[in-house]
Length: 399
Image (cartoon, rainbow, N blue to C red):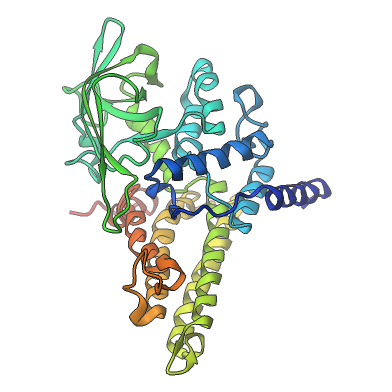
């Protein structure tokens, strides 16, 4: 690391220490997938805006679009320091990590200038309109229609698992514009205004009792002509780009996630040291020590894999194998980590939110149940294995 980057890291670390908000009196969501109440949303939105106003958010966006100029190292430093300090997460996750990079890749100059500043400042929250009740893993079969009108489009259909739709200003929307074309060619990609008439947002409650998910129903909801991103019929290609960002195939996202994984595992190790079985710390039990060691080996392999993927000579045979496998490996690793934490709790694991006897405020069973969303969202583990086998390894299609 250069002297300038080391000084920047120290600056960021000191700023976070001085400005990190205190924990609020209400329950905070564990991730952007569980933001349900207005007070949760305001707390997280205000924090993202504060980070942006201080000059620490936007190092992956050019200055002419509201960013700080593209400097991947400074962007990574900011994300790493936020995680190291256990600071609140940045609530506009879909905008920052999926919509924004996709707009940078395919948007016009006018679209980049219109949408990217609000993404960074959290003034305009984004949601994703891909999955439908009958089309999730088979996404290209979706049936939501966008019909051309004299001054734009009218959308009719039904989207589900639409995180943050209840607070979103915009949606990245995949809709069918040509029902007669082959399913992959009849799709187009839109930047849809969520305040349009004809839009109904209804909450979906998860098994944890938390909200954040929604379903969105469109009844001839209008959008302007310039809502189209890219070319007509290019929707599937653009959606694959978005899914690449969602699945963590971007280098910076993988590095950030690896740091977060290591920190989470360290907290589970601390839990094992604090909990006892038969009068001895769980951390001294050889079975639990073996499970912890295995997870540590795997998270270190994830971290080293992100570094290896940055050296072309080491991945020349299959350059996308490591990036595209990250979502699959990470989500299943998180699920095993959550299971380990609940096993460490033993008979106290069923104690839930609001129970004063629940260890760590029921954080670990809540994390374990929420982990199932990560093995489903962005493509199930089964779909991820098919993609890796067919498109990366060149294996024949499964029957």
